Image (cartoon, rainbow, N blue to C red; front, side, top):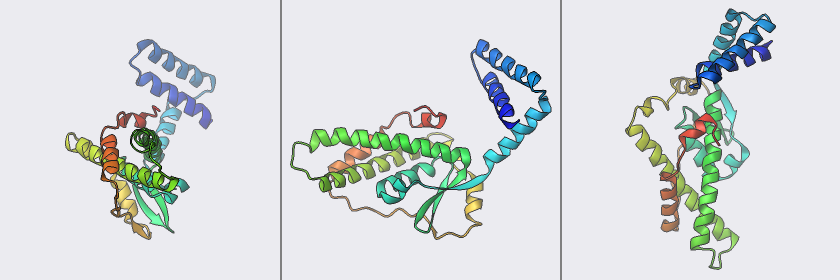
Length: 225
């Protein structure tokens, strides 16, 4: 029955949040047909929606993927994004743990994947234009990638701060339930970013510029990839 209620609720959401009048009407009619076919009352639907809404608001823990734990710049990227999308992080047993509502964690991971791909693509082009013609071994290339990525993350962080300063977004990116949750559990420590020694300021600076210029970061919230 839950699968039927989910289909009905999705159809209703589509109908109520669609600016296309024809599509909205079609979605609502589809919901009504499903309700009639399976003898579902409006009360059943409302109860299902209310229960889902309560679950969506619950704060949960979720382990960060191993790639984030094993690579410093990827870990820092996830932390930066999580803290700007209504989540927070802490360490347990040396592992990074995300804390937030289920949907917010999903959004944070979606934005992380988008930003990570942007870093890799931007660095590949940057390296080709600036270093590829020289004899650069894999160790040096990885060092340049790390420094470019750290610069990118710094630029992205500044972009977030500017967005919050220019709008009421600062009231949106914090979930008070997350703070309460962290205050009531035992863990090895909150995350404190450690400064990294940068050997190529140009590489870092170009990464920072790319991070500040990252476009469409907000669209990842809607699942547009």
